[in-house]
Amino acid sequence: MKILRDPLLWLIALFIALLVWLPHSTPLFSSLFPQLPRPVYLQESFITLTIAHFTLVAISSAIAIVIGVGMAIVVTRSAGREFRPLAETIAAVGQTFPPVAVLAIAVPVMGFGKQPAIIALVLYGVLPVLQGTLAGIAAVPQSVQSVAEGMGMSAWQRLIKTELPLAAPMIIAGVRTSVIINIGTATIASTVGASTLGTPIIIGLSGFNTAYVVQGAVLVALAAIIVDRLFERLALWLSRHRHAQ
Image (cartoon, rainbow, N blue to C red; front, side):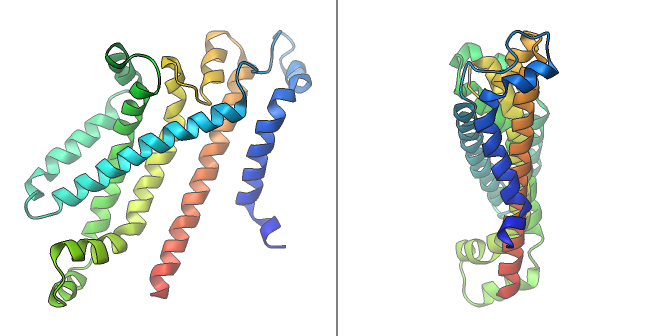
């Protein structure tokens, strides 16, 4: 069957199987790391950590998408075009600022937990979304804009019905990059008390427990691959939908 040959479904099945199996994997990790008295991370459920990790990524990515797309729309309108260099510079600075430094600044003000981590992830996630949206809107043919204007569409209607639909593939590409970056970067949120798949990695590094690091890293890497493949499917669907129209 075609479904059974789908690599994405196998990846998802493998991820779920690892979540269930890892708490019972002591024999394997004891043989791989015989010097460790506790080779399997059991302080929290891997399922709970995964849900917390994806929740953090989803919240920060949603905020980054709203900010990135919103900024791109504003600076591509005639009234806001002069602010485009400033918007791009601010977004670039936000991504080049080390997330650890953002956490160090935010924690004294906001305390430990998700809030400082969300700020760091949003700063890291805005730039790819902004760049993708700007590129997508810029790629909309002027002839299409002229036809839409000739049909009596308002500026808002042209944006919603013409520009954003045609720019969607590039916007999705920017969102894809942003989300994948945030899946990896969210691991450091555990340094400020947020539960993520980075928790066993951080505890493993601080306690010289390589097994914990491996368990967390494998799950984070697999999660990023799965989400990347899902975005690839979405991009293909959008492409086919556009051609069908």
